[in-house]
Length: 129
Image: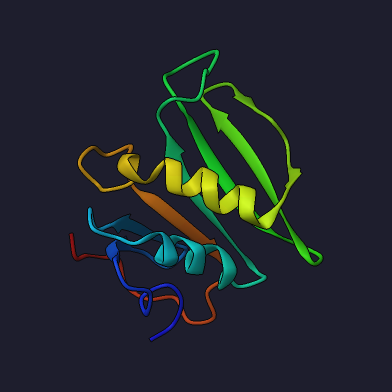
C-alpha cells in the first residue's frame, strides 16, 4: 500500500481527490510516528494538531511539515496567523509529533491529521472513519 497506509497504527479517516485525513490509533508506537516523518514523499506535506500551542487566536496550532532539501521544514498556524516555514531537525520533528499524538486520534474534528499531495489519479470522496 502507498504512504502512509502501510504504517502500523495509522488509519485512513477520510479521503478526497486532494487530501487524505488520517488518525492515529491510541496504541500507535513512537516508531510509527518516526516512519510517518521519515517516509513522507517529497511532494507532500503532513499536518497534525498541537492542542497545547499558545495560539494568539483559537486554542492550539495546526502544525504542517514537509521535506526541504535533505531536511524538514515546519509551519504552525491557526485562524488569522501562521509562522511561515522554518527548518526543524529530524529528531525534533519526531519528538514534537510524538508529544502531540494524543491530539490526533480523531476524537474531535480538529484532531485529525491531513496529508496534502499532488495526487496522480484523483479518487472519489469516501469516508472510512
